[in-house]
Structures are given as structure tokens and as C-alpha cells.
Length: 150
Image (cartoon, rainbow, N blue to C red; front, side, top):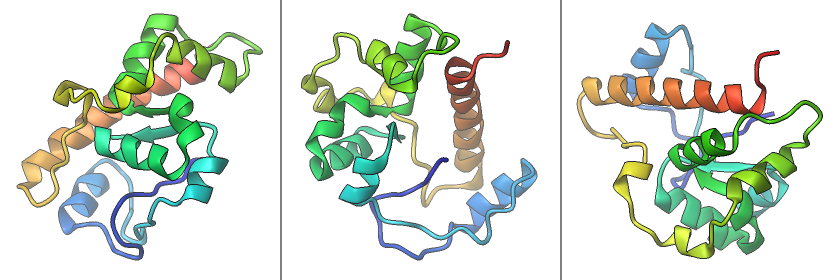
């Protein structure tokens, strides 16, 4: 099961641009409402993925031991492609440990914009389209790493 939570207030609808871009991709998200990230959500997650460094930092502030299973999406895909797809019978936590590798807590303060997915909030629709395409690619790559085709 996948859950979505963010740093803003709960109960907000997504911007119209997001609804439009997602509808063009075949998804109706008009009923989606924001949820605020909480310590219990982080604690209960097998894997925490943020689009940017701040998301990861906030998750780890809520639950410090979660840092080993909390990544920026681009970082996780890059590290996952380095270690390779999850092996048949390999538990998710073992694959996450392999992806974690030699990563230290310093990764939580290492500002590297190339590791963040750009947040188009407040910008033109084109920015939302670029971000949606990037997320589509990254999520497909991650999915192939976690659940490789047999």
C-alpha cells in the first residue's frame, strides 16, 4: 500500500493544473486531499520517499531512526540502479539496506538540487507537465527495481 503525505496543512485539494495534467495521463485525482506527514506515518512506513531534501529532512525529524529508509526519489532510483533490481525472494528491507549502502546522515544535509524533483507549485502548467513526466519516468524505474519483470 502506498500513502501520500506532505508538509502542508491537511484537507486541501490539488491545484487545478495538477488535476488537468493528471487527467491527461488518465488519472482522476479531483477527490484527493492533502494529508500532513506525521511521526506515526513515518514510523509505520517500510520506505519513505520525498521529492526533495526538505521532505526527507522533515520525515527524519519526525522519526530519526527512519533515516536509513528515507530517500529522495531521484537518489533512491540512482542508488537502486547501482545495486540492481530486487532479487527473487529478497525482502524489501534487504534491498533498501543494499541501496542505503555507505550513505551516512550527511546525506540529509547535502544540498544537491539535481537530486530533487522540481516543485512546479504556483508556476505555469508546462512546469506541472515537466514534473509529471519526470515522476512518471522515476516511478517506472523504481517499480522495475522493486518488482522486476520476470
